[in-house]
Image 1 (cartoon, rainbow, N blue to C red):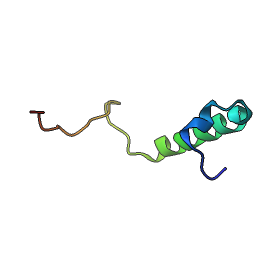
Image 2 (image 1 turned 90 degrees about the vertical axis):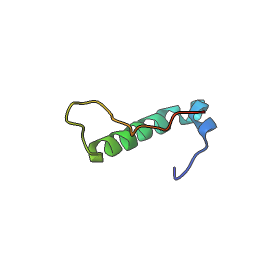
Image 3 (image 1 turned 30 degrees about the vertical axis):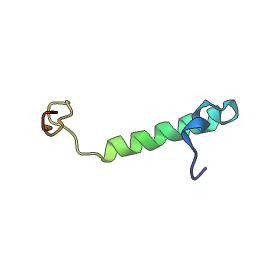
Length: 50
């Protein structure tokens, strides 16, 4: 499946194929991402809201 809207995640007919495919996609992205030395994710500081 090339593309699916967010509501596709709630369709029973796609449950057996979509969720495993999504998990594999997320695992591949996580493996390719630079790792954090301490295991924590760091975000740049944001400007305070007014």
